[in-house]
Image (cartoon, rainbow, N blue to C red):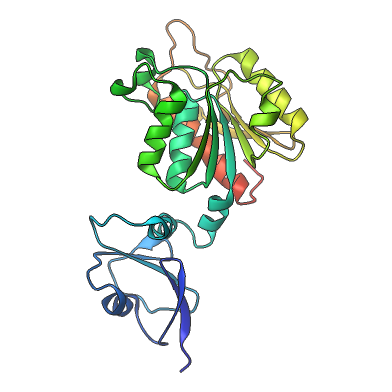
Amino acid sequence: MDPITVLISEMPAQVSAGMTVFQLRDDRRPEADIVVYNGAAITEDRPLRDGDTVVFIRRGDVPGPHEFQAFMAARHTPGVQEILRRATVGIAGLGGLGSAVAVALARLGVGTMVLADFDVVEPTNLNRQQYFADQLGLLKTEALLDTLTRINPYGCYETHAVKLTPENIPVLFKTCDVIVEAFDLEEEKAMLVETVLNCFPGVPMVAASGMAGFGSANTIRSTKIGNRLYVCGDSVSASEPGHGLMAPRVGVTAHHQANLVLRLLLGETEA
């Protein structure tokens, strides 16, 4: 029988027809104790088919750049990782929404992120934002860069510690495939959305509105408005005295945004 071609850690390899996944592991990396087959970890052997993707992982090993990308790809649908690796995503505002979106995209393996925020980390941020007590006083761009690099040291993170304006937005985000709005103030949200939609005719934008309080997370949803604008949240729960912003609902909204970014990068245009 003719050999078949499989991907081992994203590299093509010819193997004997009729070979199983565990036989391949025993042949190529017998010390591996985690086997990922076509995006899912398996504990029972499977027959190999032409085009299958397998990754063999030994717990505790620190991977190099290529293996790191392969490990990221291992838990995703085959073919997804290369699209994400080539993508550039802009995030305007690095608070409760933006910092959580950035962390999610780093874990996805998005190749380049353009991160913009002029503020510093302060104590009230710690109830919902992806920062730590030992980062208090640091610029958010500096603190988040450190965190993202610890998660995915092979991503490209372009940081801008500036206040965004209609003048600098077209310059800072000109290379982005998708742009995320993650501001607090309504007037700043409106300014960013208007500027992006006017300056980048082919670029989709993922915004957010309504996530305060401790109401049901089931009311948070993703909605498409027009051709290129998407809004995540419940659209009504504004932050006000007695109705503050807290980690759970802010996090749910941020991950709606991150999931929409993922879908848009993969060519899915519906919310």
